[in-house]
Structures are given as structure tokens and as C-alpha cells.
Length: 318
Length: 261
Image 1 (spheres, rainbow over the protein chains, first blue to last red):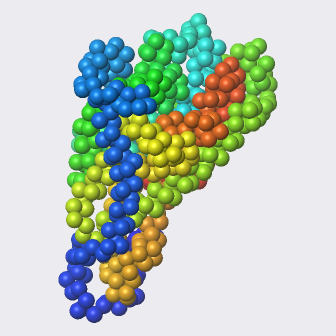
Image 2: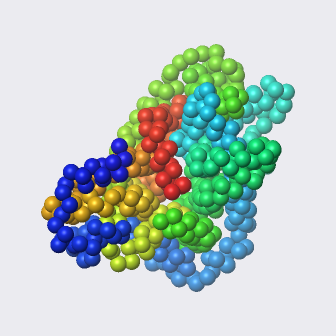
Image 3: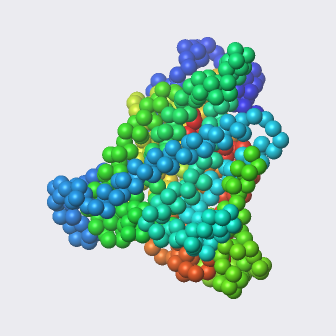
């Protein structure tokens, strides 16, 4: 059943109204009611107020707090730009920024490459394609906390990963993947990509469905190789999906918290600290609310350009 | 494709294999070895000792309340914005959507403080309210798009037959939006159920924790019992997996309205 079916049905059943009643309205595509009834205003204002109170007001407060020093009791002491100056010379903040850049590139890049490859491979109808898709997509429904715990178990020194590596001839000497600052971030990234790739795959599968197959066939007839067809015919048609995935990936990367918090809490020696985990630690573990808010503002400023990208696209689609 | 798919499923299989082993088996043979025992005691320990049972109940309560409240409120807002000429309606809609895209970090500290001020800190109610507020913009936006695509003639007909605004909402818009609402409900229920950050922000007492936060405690309490940690994580994965397989079609279409509009 689609909305359109029901629509034609009901207009067929009910006779057209007397033409005197708002004669112009029946042809307009835009909503027709000129005067908005008070009751309808209420329908809009209640949800809007909920969002204002729980999203925009707190966000505004964070900006204010970022110019203060506050431990949560008593009055916040205004300190001007001091928090931001401290950030500039804070080595952990530098690590966190650096890790966030690595995260965006590796998490975004690898999950897109893997997700796109899987989508292309699974786009052809063949036996069992639904099972493959579901299996690859399944990790996406696990929470990041669950994913983190799964991989914590796997990464243990005497755990399955080292056992598998030993079985195929790579002796890691019971390597402590998560306790070694050199490997911890990469280890978390693998877990995160394992979960994300299926999601990207689903988005690309939808994009591929929207591609015009006759173009590819024509190119094949003209002798284009598989790679040429993909590179010059299919990929350009995925531009819209790419934009969405890019914006979503960056916004998600800047939010990433749960999986790192579950697996390492930003350790060892802050080697896996991201802006979000550092912000949480400063704000809630150290209860340094002003400084924590300053980090949150930085995250916001980094995210805003991508939020706008997403919004611009959303409006264009309208 | 079979090898790739296996690669994807393998981590899950290993975790299941760990969860069904006994503590002694793991201690003597190592975590990475093939099971030499079969027991469900790790699940029992997690369920009772790790209070996963209570946490699961909390998660279900929060998820159901949040999904109903956010979809109800968002559908009202979307109805008003899509069917009436609200001045600056488009601007309002985009601002609402922008709110959902904000990094939650910028809300955490003030949200915790506001909850304390209102006296709802450390209650499940606070967790519901926060998530409803944060999800509002996204669902309003998606439902707005869906409601605009409904044929205008039906609204005309209903008006002519004398139906009021609320009646049109309840008897025409909501039933027609059922597919969209189902997709969004499947999506939002996994999002809410899987949330950790908001729970850590507004809750303090262990017994009120939803399952994600309880898992962190479980990990702290059973540091060396990897079978219990694996069992707890698997239990936490079951509800969303059921939702996924039961509503697979809805679920994927929900994702697509979400990111691929």
C-alpha cells in the first residue's frame, strides 16, 4: 500500500466539494491554509520547546561556560579566553586532535573503500546475496559498547586474535594490542570499521540501485574494461551518496566516544584519546567544567562546516 | 564472497565460543584455544551477578518511552510544518535538524546541570527527556518530507467534510505515515538502546543503568572473567539483533531516509 493509492481512492470516493470553498486551493502544491489555526501552532511549539530546552539552550550554555572556571558548585568564575589559551599548550589536547584526524581519515577512508567494494560485489543478483548482506550488516546493529567489549575479548594477549595469527604463522609473542600505545588506536579502528563497513555498504547499494544500467551496458559494448566502467560511468553517478557519506563520517568521527571509552578509556598514556573522550574525562572525571566546555566548543567548531554541508544538501533535496 | 563474509562473522563466532566456556577451561587453556568445555554459567553470572537482567529492563523502558514520545512529538511538528503555512517554517525545520547534528559533547555538561536543577538527575525520566530532545530535529525533518509527499486532495476532502486539524492528523496523516513511522521506530529503538554517552551523563546509580553502561560495570567487576564479559555483551546484542531481523526491510529503509534522503 502506498500513500498515492490511498490518495486516489479517497478522492474517487468522496465527491469534489462545492467550488465555492477555497476554489484556488485544490490546485496548489503548497500547503493551502492561509491562516494558521492556534491549535496548529501549539502542535509545533511543544516539540520545538522541548528541543530548545534540551539542545539549543544547553549548547548556548556550553559556550558561556567555556569562558569560565567552574567545578560545579558555587558560582562560575569568569576567566575570559584562558581555557582556550591553555588548550593551545595542552599536550593531551594535541594528541586528541591528532588522533581525531587519524580517526577521520582511517575510519572514513577504510570503511568507505571496504563498504563500496562490498556494495559493488553484492550488487549483482546471485545466490545467497541476502545472507551475505545481512551477515556483513549485522555488526551495525550492535552498540559501540558491545562492539568494544567483543573486541576487547578478541584482543586479549592469549585471545583469539593472537591465536589465529599464530596459527597462520605470525608469532606476535602474545602481543598486548590494547595495552601498547603503538597499536591501541589501530586496534580500536579495526573494531570500529568492522561495525561501520556494512552501513556504508547499505548506503552504496542504494546508490548503485539508482544508477542507470544502460550507460554501463553501452560502455561495455564500446569495449570499456570493468575498471573503466566503474571509474568513469558508475562512480560519477554516486556523487550524491559520496557527499552524504563524507558529511556523516566526519560528524560521526567527531562524536566517536563509546567504542574508545569501552576499549581503552583514552589510554594507555592517552594514546587513544579523542577530543570526545578527553572532553568527557575533563568535564566529568576531573569535574573541570569550564575547560571541558572549551573542548566541547572546539569539537563544535570543527563539526559546523560539515553540519552545514549536510544541511545545504538537505535543503536542495526539498 | 564466502571468505569475506566469514571474515565478518568470525569475530562474533569467537566471542560466542569464549562465552560458552568455563572459567577453569579458559584459565588453563588460554582464551584463544578451542573450547574444551560447554556451560551457560557465564550467561547466568552476567544475568544475575552483573545485574544485566535489571539493566535490560531499564533499557527496554527507556527505549519504548523515548521512541513513542519522540515520534509522537516529531510527527506533530512535522504535521504543522508540512500542512500549514507557518511563517519561516523552512527555517524552523532546518534549525531543528541542525540541533540533531550538533556534537553531543557540547550539550553534556549543561544537560547534566539542568537535570540536577530540575531534580531529575539520576532518573530514567531524565534519560528519556534528553534523548527525546536530541532526536526531535531529525525525526521532524524526515516526517516532514514524508508528509509533504501525501496527496493534497485528501486534506481538501477531509476539510470539506468538516474534519478539524487534530482529526486530520489522527485519522489521515498518522495512518498514512505508518510505513515511515515503522522505519523510524526500528531505527530509533536501536539508537536509544545502544546509547552509552547520555546514560553516563545523566545517571549515577548502578541499578538505574541501561545495558550499555551496565556492561562497562560488568567489565570492571569481572576483569579476568572474559567468558562473563563475552556473555554480557552477547546478551546486550540480542534485542537489537531481533529488531534487525524482524524489521529488516523497515530498518534498511529507515537508514536510507536517514542518510540518503
